[in-house]
Length: 323
Image (cartoon, rainbow, N blue to C red):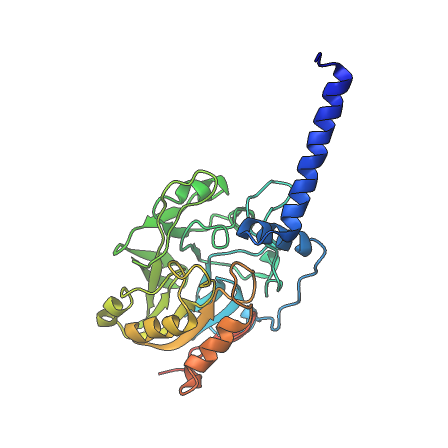
């Protein structure tokens, strides 16, 4: 049978329509994770972000105290006796690949407690690893218009340079840095956590850190992202720690890379931390557990000592009590 142009167009059109119909059927009914994530992204298109429950006022924070606020997910603003630190800054509505005209990926459920223009003057950025919900190129481009120091994990400097960063220090596990700021010195030490650091699209191995911050005889732990590990028990001998900032969500089904709320308490206890600051919850849907479950489980895990739970909600502020 001779293939005419008309028959070719008819066949290709039929195949295209069949492919579209098949793709639509898969998207609407498949239980595969990719289909469920695609349906979620489509549903999010017209959804508005909820306002943050609280809005911090860092202009009122005293440089004589340790004060922090959860801006959302793993982004926290700290005033550590006058040294102002921003962790894992992610302050745009979506996380994912930066397309220059927007970001393709999950949308925030709750808006950040502060926008970039509302931030105080910062002394440095602290980045735990390269995943897009912790290292957001769009946010970094805004923040790095100033000559702002960045402390980050191994093999992540290229991403920060692409965002405009110039004063970059990479730390591997066990390495320390003494950073001089207008308010004085702060010591930063990277320690091992149980996670991973690859980033799409290159997929090459990159570092991933937790950090100890020390200043004026006070030490804090910023855990970054981690599954259950005995690394925190090994920190105890170099404590005490006034507080530990711990991730508590994305454990279902990613338990090999993210701890449960109960495990977050166990690790903070192992390190000897007095207070626990939960993060990495209620802002992005990154896993299958119900969105409010992690905080509810954390409150249950600490029901016999609720005073240790430093804060709960986006925008809430905690000031470390004087010893």
